[in-house]
Figure 1 (cartoon, rainbow, N blue to C red):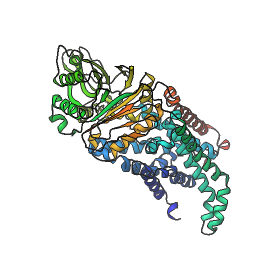
Figure 2 (cartoon, one colour):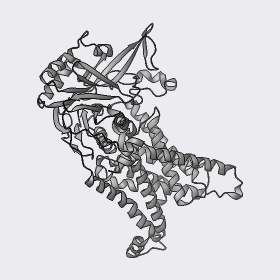
Figure 3 (tube, helix red, strand yellow):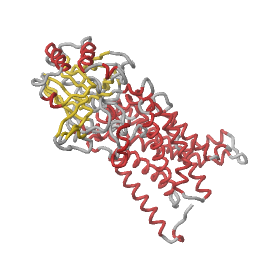
Figure 4 (spheres, rainbow, N blue to C red):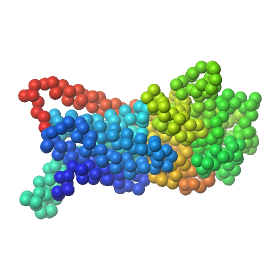
Length: 556
């Protein structure tokens, strides 16, 4: 018990529990108690009653969040060592600032329910705001932890991943309250027999509340899972190509013509006359192509697309979705990231997904870019680091973005099918992903190149997140990854035909478009916006309390 009185040990314990709870190999149930040691750290700091509450909270929680970030996202180092250090340190610091803010607000005399609500509101607000700004890195949003267990979060179609965040933190606070109630039972001077402790525990109202809060969402999810029916109308035969090109060398050593050859030779093993859709990875053709040429291939032929034309002649029903590196020329500075090459000549570079059919292209430019890799955040501040951005999509430096989540229109004998094709990083943003669906997408493709991280937990974590997006939107997802993992994911979050890592292959399956919009798709991250309002009120309440007469307030 002496160790449990040590604030540093408690902080380290929280960090280890958070790390060990994370997928793909963690024990997920640990997430429900992972914050409890940190809550006791806050109690012990308040018992001392000295020092600046905010900075005390920051200092003593930092070890926990650093362990969590390092343990789960260390693999970023494989793609960008400086970026990994920056991401891990900044993310850990931002998290402990949230804890510090809560510790500061907690100095007011609040009921345990208000204290709990304050932390949940602050944490949800942090996750929500972290989705919006240019330093976004939302890999560790708490609701993502259930990605490997889609069976238990089918209700994400109503709440999105923020419902999971609120569930996790609520259970943590109930466990914390329960432990506080029974802590005296373990005191050396007042120790009680285990049988007596268990008898009191099972009869305690907090324990009953804990069981209810855990079981109700689980039962609701099982009911949804058992009763949801995937409508199997207007079937589409689809094929996914896993190109398996080394991202650091082969991707640039091979020409676009040679890369197209790889795609076609891999696809031919599974293509049939009935195949309507073929999906290839991000940067399938990695060398940059001028968009003016792509829109006028009759005038400016391109070797790679001439090969695709030959394939389409043999398979006239086929529509090809693939990732490109593209650039557009302007006679003015079209955006802050457009680069001047000569007087009145500006070029914007894009990470692009494209639909190709009948010598026509539809393009979507990636709009949520990876900070420090595809976009230098806040260029007025960090612009001097622009040249350090590495090449993860065919072009180094900051890229241009699209103005909306564009949807591709595929014409088949079944009619027009609308398809969204977000690129890589965009698949971890629930509201952005849903925007494709709001714009009409009946099927979703995720094209990605996870090869930068090597065969680490990184590509596995990224794959699992697509299961949550499938549940939130109730759409089939066709995931094409350069080196893996590629798969078909149904609207219940179940994956089919998962490919092995670093295997060149193609997989095929029937998929079914869906037009119905889920509650989450319609309303987005409404829970987070509510929590943001609650957090603002809590901060305002705390500020007002500082100016009230001390006789009217009680600080701890």
